[in-house]
Length: 273
Image (cartoon, rainbow, N blue to C red; front, top):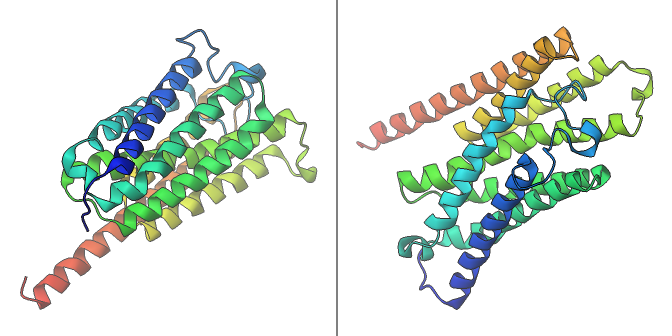
């Protein structure tokens, strides 16, 4: 449904654009390029690749470059006249802006050694991204380019933050001296990875086989496995659990996508399409 653009739309667009700028600046600080400390070295290395069994190997974080590129592209895309009139962008604008601000706040919490604060921030960020995912499913893209820029970017964002949340919570618990109630760190790692796998499968099923969240979530799980097989903190069971989780999420996503595609073709055939 289309509506005439007005002042409120322009304000929303500016808010999204400014939020994207803030997020990009935050990413530079988090990378250490703007005088800050690299995320993996901040907070006494609590989020480093060998800090916990759930921590991904360093190269995993390169996915942020793709996500930020997509977020900047969205900030520009939503300014175009054709997008101003789209109800989906009116609904998505402020939640996306909130996710960008939360991402910057998360980086700053790590930079200022407020590791405890990073957990509620990233949990809220994950909730916001989940809400955006629901909005995307309820409001279909108007073009292939819209699907790539909007749905693709936010899907990657959501999938990666699922892994990042697990790693973040684990890091805070370890830093706080959590003893695991008598269970070994390996058992806890496998349990956490199992939960991440279930979340990935749920996203695949609810999202009708959306590829972008599955891609980034599997990317994170694979790099967790790499870290446990090649880093200083070795754990073969954790690596195996991460790889199995990635495989299951990918398989379920593809199967759901193929079944929906086959069902759509069958429906069109019955209708003479």
